[in-house]
Image (cartoon, rainbow, N blue to C red):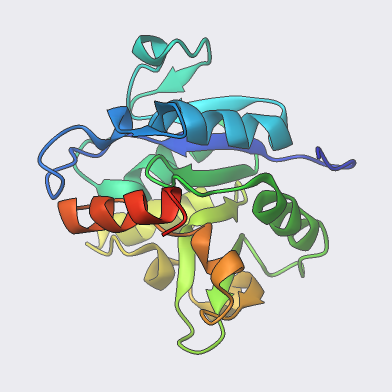
Length: 203
């Protein structure tokens, strides 16, 4: 399903502490493999190459490069800044806790990124009903590094605020579309895990 044309670098954000889960969620097993490896394989199938942000992926039997955060404790925004600064490339960034992320969702995002306006430095999905954007399934362009650095220094860590609407290209989807929304379900806490198990089993 790999699309043709310019391709961003696939990036897996994996520097979190899993504090709400109470254990390392990257090792949770979904569909017979650790969650971290499942997400990385999904991204690699589309982008062709993957970089990990925040942790060494070798314990997961993934022979891919990784980068540590420039500045620890800055959350996902710090991870995005670190990979943009280290690579100077457009990066398709996803969090490591998305058990139902699929290739079609990423292919659609890349297609939108290729047609983005010149003003857009973040290409992401947006929920029609709420305007919420999926900041952790998004493509960030290298120009975003300067914006991130400035906002992080000012204490702003929320990616949707760092990249306001005028700096984004959106792919809209409805939360009523369960097939589309499923790709963005993330496992942050024990209740999330219970729900995800039901989704995995088709309940």
